[in-house]
Length: 214
Figure 1 (cartoon, rainbow, N blue to C red):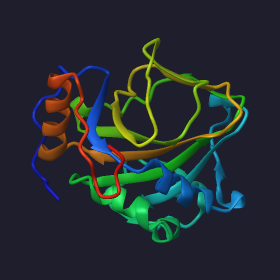
Figure 2 (cartoon, rainbow, N blue to C red):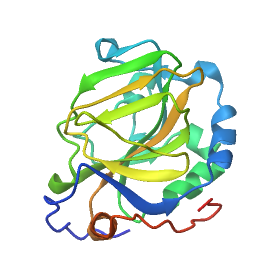
Figure 3 (tube, rainbow, N blue to C red):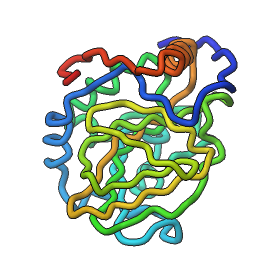
């Protein structure tokens, strides 16, 4: 993995589709194999209505309590894979496609007829060194993800950078769950270059990764 500092990224738009693609069917199959009781209810109930839950794949090193494993701790410096990731070989392949330092990695599930209220995650801005990437696993046409008041159209298997230090909210008005692979990472030279190139090109070309669909 690269450890070089990232160049300034202040000119990035609030959303960038990266030139990566993964196989949504393979991801969904592994998610379907997770026991329902393994999902951890989100620990800030004031931020949502309905059902919003987490399955940690990487967490702060040494965390053993499920809540502490599910938290994305901005002060943590050492992270480790969880037992759930060891049982998900394709998701492991997906994460291996990212040549930047990975921090917390979680599956996040928003149940049907549920919503995440408008909020901002102030530490999640690539210009300041930390980025959150979303890879949709399962969704439906009635999921409405709003960033700065405008809808973000994300398809299963794509990879998106979203500047979540800005206000965002999600409504799942459909009758199936929305599951995203949510990757917190350090912005190094590799990721900065990928973000800058994708934002500049605008057309967001897609290249196939192992097992990918694009």
